[in-house]
Image 1: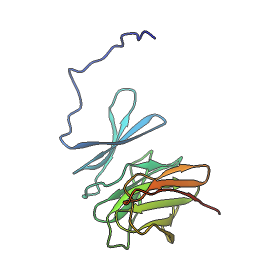
Image 2: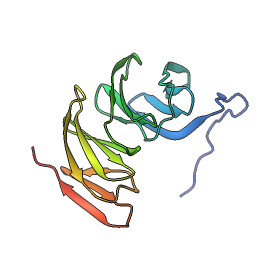
Image 3: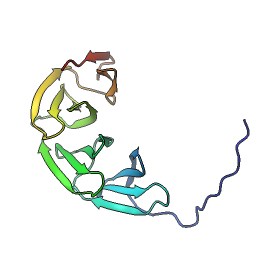
Image 4: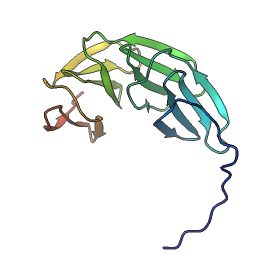
Length: 167
């Protein structure tokens, strides 16, 4: 396969000292987390900034999304829900745990928060109310992958899990 040369302009990049590579491409926007500035939404065509929301805390997870919203976790143990189109915060919920939230997944109307020590917490993705937990014991060392109503993840001690989520 021969690749065509594409037109690129690297002479004028956007410079943000602390952008993470924790990003999400969703429809026509790129959402990128920043260590000091929360989350940015960029127009995917010209990389102009659509909006920026500052959480004033270091992100710990990749952002995840549904049709209308973006979710991400911060080191101060909060879940942030932001409207994709406007960048307005819809809610923030404090995670009641002694452990740092590490990873996030969304399936149907459930939000799954994986902790560095212990469990996967389950929240309602619409209103942020706590529902239940999945006891892992040793905590997570991987992202949570969702597939066919299952959560797939690796624990801190190297066990690979597949958990069926029934409604």
